[in-house]
Length: 180
Length: 180
Image 1 (cartoon, one colour):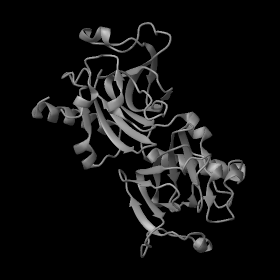
Image 2 (cartoon, chains in turn purple, cyan; image 1 turned 135 degrees about the vertical axis):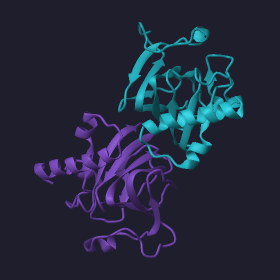
Image 3 (cartoon, helix red, strand yellow; image 1 turned 180 degrees about the vertical axis):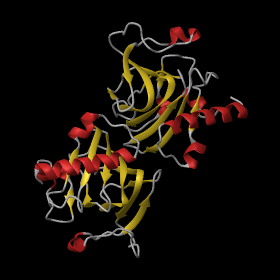
Image 4 (cartoon, helix red, strand yellow; image 1 turned 90 degrees about the vertical axis):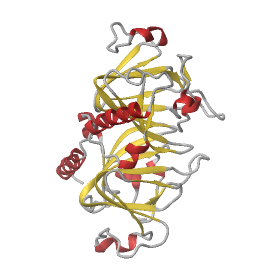
């Protein structure tokens, strides 16, 4: 993503965050992560991430998704003898379509762009509206998409080691993304 | 606290939560914890607690304090071979005066009711306004008070084992409180 596109993405994501009425600092907006997961298609596959805290034991983040923007399917493997990352998502604004392993939901609400149809294989749907939350068991494949207006989503978890995430789509390299 | 007083406390604390614009469920408001720490003086020493999640590894809560209401001085000792609870506080609404061990701040902003003057002995002041946060090291004595309008405060932490907390004020029995 070039500098102009990155700046536009930042402004768009800040607008999403502001809908939630959550108070962020200017520094948080300046230093937040904007990831396109290395695919160069931010508005389809991308995410805004503000990390409140990420120690060895605890992590809390605020995620932002534009309209129908997707955080692609991944899993958090165990690291250093710990079991995998455990995470709870709580919707703060908008609507989130979350998919995990399990019985496939018919007629899912998510809209997967046609170029990405084969990049997902778990379709057990959980719909999160403001105030709704869901706790993932460790080592669960999952992905999620913002609804029509987008979404703001809190994540409460154990230590977050994004570089260790495994993506179902082998074209994704999470580490590279942090440098775009 | 009798049923009428408890109901008034609940309404007052819900009003504080609503200032933050955070979306809670009706069930969360119904089942939230209102603690007076067993002292029977809720508006001076008390707290509203909504627990989002509390697994063996991760805990997230939303705390509410009325105007100048105090969460009394305590410490979280290690349990079951784990080091003590690690916690981060982030102010969402209002103002919080947080006190931890260390150099005593002169002219602290907190107002300690005169009956409680000898119930505190750490006075290193951290002022948290909306968007500000502070991470406590494990095994740190701390207490906090809502500012003039009260406060809503997020807590991100390792597992929360409130019954194991040690209070500086020996009159406090945290477990008893959960049953009032």
